[in-house]
Image (cartoon, rainbow, N blue to C red):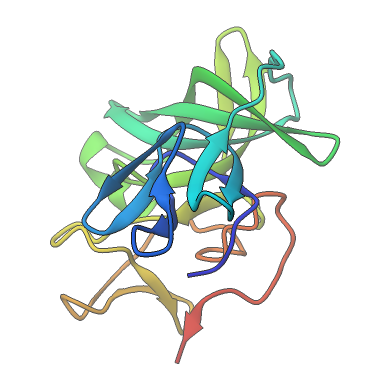
Amino acid sequence: MEDKNIAFPGDIIAIEEEYLPGKNTEEYGGNIYATVMGKVYKDDKNLVVSIIAENKKIKPSVGSIVYGKVIKVINKEAIIQISAVSLNNNIYPVNIESRLRLPVQNKNAYSHIITLGDMIRGRITGVKPLYLTIFSPNLGVLKTRCLVCRRELILRDDTLYCNNCQRSETRKIASDYGNINILGGNNEGRRES
């Protein structure tokens, strides 16, 4: 497991053998998970790991880079629960919903682009109502799970792959899928051959 400076809800930030769960975290299955978006704080003296959420109120504007989770797909749109906004190379927590237009013929054909539970990076395209896009190389799905067994998919030869089911899936992935560099640079990520 790699150390993270910023965590999103659901991110594993430590294992219970190393730390106790602190503020804004919970333990499940031997791992300690973030329950809010914020900075990871590890108290090595008391062996407690916490998430420190900032209280600065930020509203995304057109062009803002945002991070969120797909919570619903209706007709030809997805509803994204936005957890964070990037502003001047800083990440600020928010809790708002946005819509994503899906270029599909019907609501059953969206799973090759996104699916429920996907963690995404998007860019705001409209504010009344709030809309975003994921259709740019550094935008898209950052983390997703297998539709069958719900294990995390890895990027293998430019394809999303489930080691458990030994099957491939497609999504509109960000160029740094699996690496989750939340500021959007292209780095070497977790790629398997």
